[in-house]
Amino acid sequence: MRRLLLFAFAALLMAGPPASGAARIRVPLWVEAKNGQPAARLKPEALRATVAGDAAQVGTVLGPDDGLMLLIVSDLTGDMTLVDTAKKALVERLHQLPAKTTVGVLRAQDSLRVLVDPTADRAEAAAGIESLPVSGRAALLDTIQDAAAIGD
Image (cartoon, rainbow, N blue to C red; front, side, top):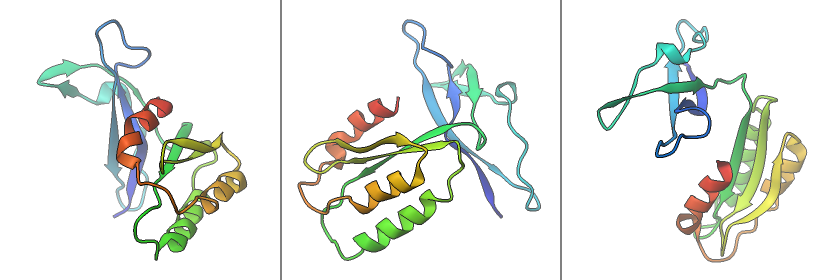
């Protein structure tokens, strides 16, 4: 059975800038397709959310037809035997993304660096992926919070 991904960070709790003291939580959500047909688009009022047992407001639900910014953060260190295969597979998937998806390429080795600013140009993003260096000190865990902040 095919799953329809209502792209990562699909249900946005507390939409818009959070009020003082409020938090915004992004929740990825998958909806099963039935008989090969895509699931109907979800509306915020059709969802119920709780955070730490308390009711939370679902502000926005984004789907495949909405814009998405995908940040690819690489950390190519360690066993290098499959790096070229992984890059090729990533570029192939890149070309399958919806047109409204912008893609940025970053590297985490040594420190977080932007190689390609978010763009809808698949050739530019693919070139960034193919040029990813396979050297340096592994630093993905050290850069996760910075990468997430860039995504926000």
